[in-house]
Length: 306
Image (cartoon, rainbow, N blue to C red; front, side):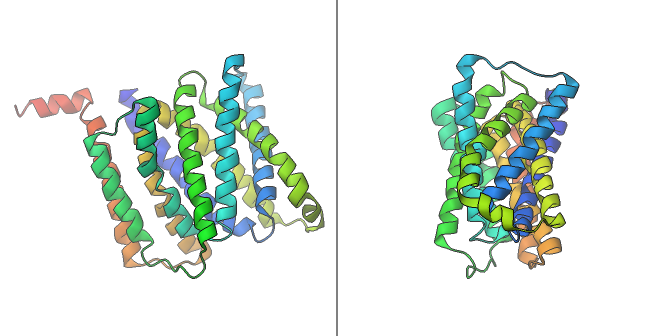
């Protein structure tokens, strides 16, 4: 797969673009529906799309009985706990601030990846991570705190730790099952986790809300890009690059969120944010140096000078 490493990087970038877009889409759809409603129907649509794809492509995989407990735990971390923290957190913080909190995942993940997976972060990976995160901070340095709350920040932090737990379980399952099988299963289980909460807290209110075309389209986009495409791509990235190196790309999320927020939500886009984007991308390139120099053609090129 080394020869296809550029494709894996493109997968990671595209996944971050999808997830960066969800922060903006949440702000749009929350004008009409509550978080439990949005998340439940997002997972319903994702489950249907993936089930139809598996049926048509005849790529159905049987999950071993011994692995069901891991899939149940995987789905509990994400989508259930992660979406719970993210969805409700974005009710109390801005899209930009929410995205920068999520981008701390690669700062937290290495400690747990080393503890449970014995996966080490390379020297270039660590340096690139710090540089990239400095760029993330610069992007939102002018973020107004007036519209944000401590409760919202805590919910987003809860989402971060949920994502780390998800990543730890995903690393092992991704070597045994296909990306489609993993994402389909977690979507269905996540939908079942959210069903009672939707029925108890949102169902009566949902029946009284007039159907809105913009809200429906936005939920479909959340499902298709945020719950299906992004997870399938990222599962492949984690399998090929490892959890730590895959998570470094999370720093791209606020970059995409800030750009989209500027065009769609009319949020400010200053020089600080432009410089921050350049720093984030530079950090990501540095973090992948150790992988690039492992490539045989690169090594052959270097050897010419020795």
